[in-house]
Image 1 (cartoon, rainbow, N blue to C red):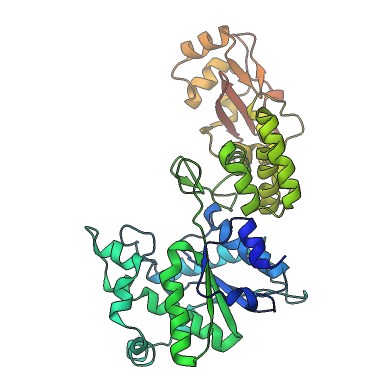
Image 2 (image 1 turned 120 degrees about the vertical axis):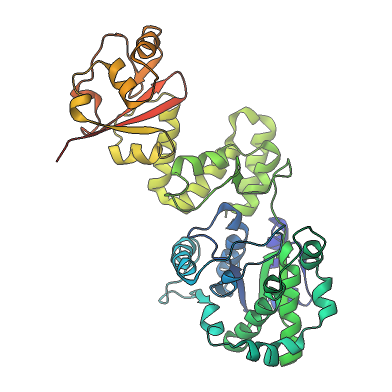
Amino acid sequence: MNILDTFKSRHLFEDMTSPELAKALDKTICVYAGFDPTNDSLQAGNFVTIMTLAHLQRAGHKVIALVGGATGLIGDPSGKSKERNLLDAGQVERNLEGIKENLSRFIDFDPASKNPAIMVNNYDWFKDFTFVDLLRDVGRYFRMGVMLGKDSVKKRMDSDDGMSFTEFCYQILQGYDFLHLYKTYGCVLQLGGSDQWGNITAGTELVRRMCGAEVYGMTFPLVCDSTGKKFGKSEGNAIFLDARKTSYYDFYQFFLRAHDADVIRYLKIFTFLTLERIAELEDSLNKAPERREAQQALAEELTRTVHGETGLAVAKKATQVLFGGSLEGLAASELENIFANVASATLPIEQVMNQPVSEVLSAAGMLSSKGEARRLMQQGGVYINNERVADAARSFGQTDLIEGRLAVIRSGKRNFFILKVSHGA
C-alpha cells in the first residue's frame, strides 16, 4: 500500500498541492512538519502531526521535526481569532526542550539507527537575518494580492481585532523555512493541518520562484469529535503529553471516554493498530457497545505509547482505586500521581496521629466542622484508603498512613482528598 493510501484509509489526508506527490512518495523523500513552541509540552492535538511523521519514518522516508524557535516569537495567526501573547526567548528555549523530549517518545532520533529523524530550530537560521535581508532576499518574491487572499489572513482582517503586521509576515517566515530545508536537506514535502494550507503554499511557491523546483505540501483534517469540539480539549483544558501537566489517570480517562461515534476514527488516526484489528473492534462496538472494548484499546494504546507500561499500569490502577478498589501495593508517590488534581492539605504529625478522625478532617479543611465529619461517619460516608470508617469515634492510627506520610480520604463515592503529614525538622 502506498503511504498516501495509508493516510487516506486512516483519515490522515485532506489535500495536496500536486497529484505528482503520489509518485514522489513511491521513492524515499525528505519531509518535515513544524511544531509551535507555545508550551513546554505537546498536547493531544499534536498527535495527528506526530503520527503522520511517524508513519512516514516507518515507511523509510527521512523525517525532520522543525520547532519554530523564531516563528514562535511571533505566533502563527492560522486558526486564531486574535493575536497571541508574544513569548520571550527564554520561554521559547525552555519550551523547545520539553517538545524535544515529547517527540522522542514517538519518533526515532537516535543517530545510530537505520533511518534517524532530525530536529531543527528555525531560530538557528533566522537569528542573524536582518530586516533588510528579509525584504531584499525573500520579501520580493511574495505578492500582496496572494498574501491578502489567504483564508487565514482574510478571516483575521474581517475580525474586530484585525491582524498585526507581525502576524501578517508569519507566512513569509514559514515559507522561508521550507526554502532553507529544501536547500540544506533536500526536503520536498511539508505537512500540516488544513488551517496551514496558506503557509504551506507560500513555501512551495517560494521554492519554485527561487530555485525553479517543485516541492509539495500535504494537509490532514483538523480532528473534532462528533459534537464538533476540537480534539485534545477536556472541559476547556488541554490534554498534555507531560504527566506533570496531565496525570496518567486523566490522560487515560480522556481516551476511555471517547464517544462511540468517534472511537473507531480515533483508533485509525492515533494508533498503529492494523486496520484488521480496528475492524474487529468496530464489530465489537456494534454488537456490544456496553463493553467499550474499542475505547479500552484506544486508551491503552495511547497511554502506553506516551507514558510507557509503567504509566499505563498506574492509570489502570488509578481507575480501580477511584472506583473504590484496594490501594494495596501502591506506593505513596504513585498515589500522589493518581490524585495529582485532587484537593489536599498537610498537617503536622501530632495533629493527626491518635487524634479523632472528625477533628483531623475538620483541621485539614476537607469538611467544614467536626460535627459535619461525625454525622457523615455515622452515615457510613467516610473512607480512609477506600475502607469505610465504621466508628464515628475512631482515631487516626499508624496503619492509616501510607509510608507514614499520607492517607487517601473519601466522602461519598467520588469526593477524594489527600491528607499529608509533616514530621517536623
